[in-house]
Image (cartoon, rainbow, N blue to C red; front, side, top):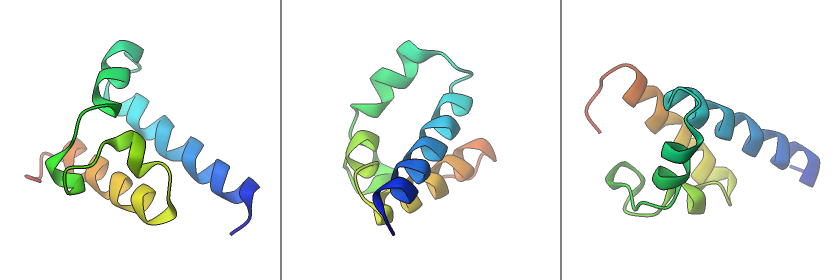
Length: 70
């Protein structure tokens, strides 16, 4: 995956986070810095730094959107 594709993947994941928090940027900023159990206690911001992390983050977002325990 080249840099452009990776940045596009990051942007898509970030857009999903924004949607999860109804585009409340303050809530998004807070959540991005919290260690999240569903991400093995790394922050969503850390997850956004790798393809594997982004995949896990997107799965977590889907679970949260559908009320599936994480």
